[in-house]
Figure (cartoon, rainbow, N blue to C red):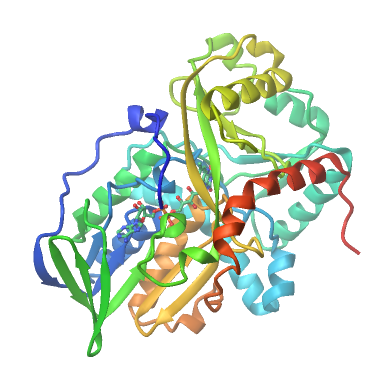
Length: 432
Ligand SMILES: Cc1cc2nc3c(=O)[nH]c(=O)nc-3n(C[C@H](O)[C@H](O)[C@H](O)COP(=O)(O)OP(=O)(O)OC[C@H]3O[C@@H](n4cnc5c(N)ncnc54)[C@H](O)[C@@H]3O)c2cc1C
């Protein structure tokens, strides 16, 4: 994907250094080639290496260069729109509930891996909160709590007085929380996963774009500029940063630019008055309000823009005004870092798992919720590489369906923000 000039991010400035890696040179064999060095690819490689299966990761640029190194670091055990009931409606009771079970367990897996491998990434598992921005959306919060509680998730409805205290703001109308969520330094987590995968026996090559895939008998040969790997299995883990390696893949998602920003460190007394429990927070706006603290007391937030001219300055103004409205105690808001990345939206707002050819598997379409989901998908993809039939995986595989007129749609996608803002201004009603 072509990429706008990238300002240095908070995460690039604060994450632990990456493990020593370099380009693939020469020919080699493996059990699996993993293309993409974000959470999906690194978690796949780690889980394969742990059962003695030789995985070779090929990353075009650097570890965590895609969405995994740029995100807000909120570890959220839900999809962006689809609730368990929606998954059951779409895929049937057994498969829908199994899919929801994967989402339910996803945040716990992130923090379990962090503890198990001693990953140094400012991990805080104090829960994730979703406040609601209109009174009617308390119905949505209630429905979500009921559905996730029925699946055994540690969730709780929060009334307005309690939520006001938890957030240090009287802007919202109540909400709900899932205690397995939290936040991390996202680039630090990606680098830690890479280190753990290498320690367990995986090979990770950076500056090694896969440029060509070729079927050779029962195996696949994956070429890079200076080498090639031959293996019976390929995991394509290129997400929204997919290029044209697999025809039609990148056309299955619409890339939407999301701006991220970090304030200057906030004084201790003000900090203690805003989300004193140090949870991750993202609300019910389609034009999402989201924020969390980092380890230096910066509020890390962001947003989207309809017009992307003079974007850094405009997003700073827009989000400063928003944060001041939510938390007047902040006073003047100044930002030290602004950066951006692409979120991959699918038409049905559900992530898609694809079996692209015999031995070739991948997923994409996080719709903005992928820190936890990509990690657990890596574990499932590793199981598929190990021989678990794709049809038996708890996440249903769907056919590759490139979006018609993708070239035009991706340029019009920003207009969706208008629709989101219009919906945000309307009251929510439970579907009949
Ligand atoms: C700005 C932003 C904020 C977000 N905030 C959150 C959040 O707070 N919480 C949350 O849950 N989710 C969030 N997300 C989503 C989350 O970051 C992603 O879902 C997740 O990181 C996806 O991981 P991945 O490994 O599938 O893909 P990526 O991390 O995008 O990795 C794909 C990798 O593939 C590489 N690649 C591409 N083509 C090739 C090739 N031909 N050969 C080799 N390598 C290739 C790329 O260089 C890239 O490094 C956010 C996303 C963005 C962009």
